[in-house]
View 1 (cartoon, rainbow, N blue to C red):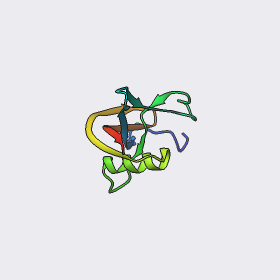
View 2: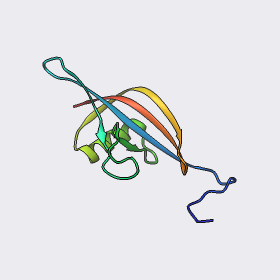
View 3: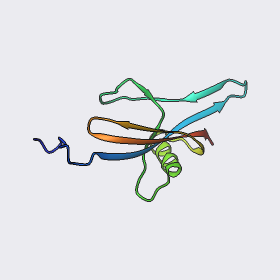
View 4: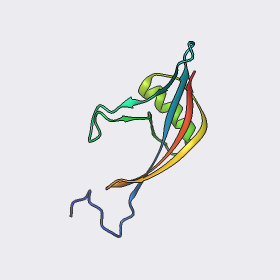
Length: 104
């Protein structure tokens, strides 16, 4: 068995992430929701809400502000939590918290 394969008695890796559902209303009243398109990997070309991994000692909201600044060079404010998503991938379990955000 390779090092990357899990046996039934090994705990599955658990990854905690947060995602920004960024809303904006233009001056003409047009409402927008922002998404990013993956440019690599198995899900290349698919759309997703931007965000990333929550680092040790970091709140989900702080992780969002940091990730959006790093990845999109934008400043956001993280607002109300919209939902939580739990999903089992073949090699890890994902816990994702989604927040309503706005560009500042």
